[in-house]
Length: 176
Length: 164
Image 1 (cartoon, each protein chain N blue to C red):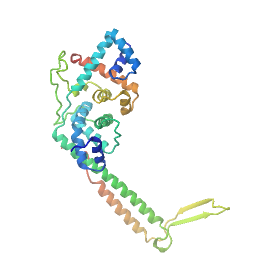
Image 2 (cartoon, rainbow over the protein chains, first blue to last red; image 1 turned 45 degrees about the horizontal axis):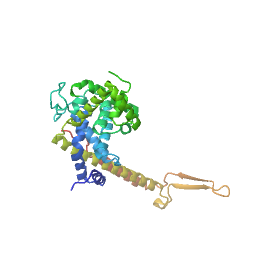
Image 3 (cartoon, rainbow over the protein chains, first blue to last red; image 1 turned 30 degrees about the vertical axis):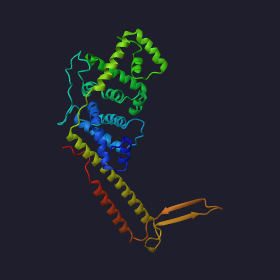
Image 4 (tube, rainbow over the protein chains, first blue to last red; image 1 turned 120 degrees about the horizontal axis):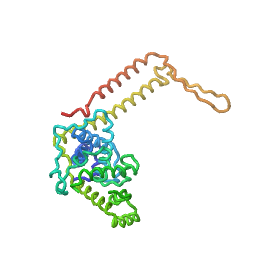
């Protein structure tokens, strides 16, 4: 019988290695997908997921959101810290990088049937803009929650969100 | 194409407006084509995000992550153990140095109490070097043993270096 996320965390807190593996199985793939869109390469994305999950194992989940949303919040913060590291592998693509390509041609007028992958959508944006978009569009966090997660004022959240969306509107006009 | 109420349209789309402001912007939307176009685009963007495929985590990367997370966790436990050992060593060495009756000839601690006046006004505690040299090698040996143990612990594990 599978346990819920809260129980899983309790088991991890008690030092159960099987529970840590289960956490990775449940959320690792999604976190990796989001991480890849945030940092733009497989190696950094993998590091980011590792740091997020290791951080989560020592953190306190208060149950104010779903576990996945809590993990994504940690991940977006870690992405900000990763940016400040000197050794960052900008633009590097790992050997087992399996970024999906758009499932349809990137031409105007295709509509939403031609799906854009998340990497393509976020590629042209700065990390600041990617962070707010991920937390708002993927996790549905409110402006206040995003401000708290990223340690920035609510007004900054709004302005980043507006600018990021303005860029996407121009870039992907044909998909809207 | 611009309207000074674009920010409110974003907030309306994100369900971040107070009820009274919602009514106001809904009325505005009926008469402002630019804001209607913006709202339509924002909905379109949200739909794109909702169906956008994510990069796929390969089985090899999943196995690497599992291994590295386990190693990082073990390293954390090891570090805590090292700290506890170091703390225990410090307490033990301190206790040996301050033990009053060590080697049967009084310890390295002298307590002098100034009793000028009706009540003790001041207590002075002075730590003196041990008079007996016999116990010093024991302390050095113990410290050496602790240091060796810590060096051995610190050399174990290699988190994050396992990317083949």
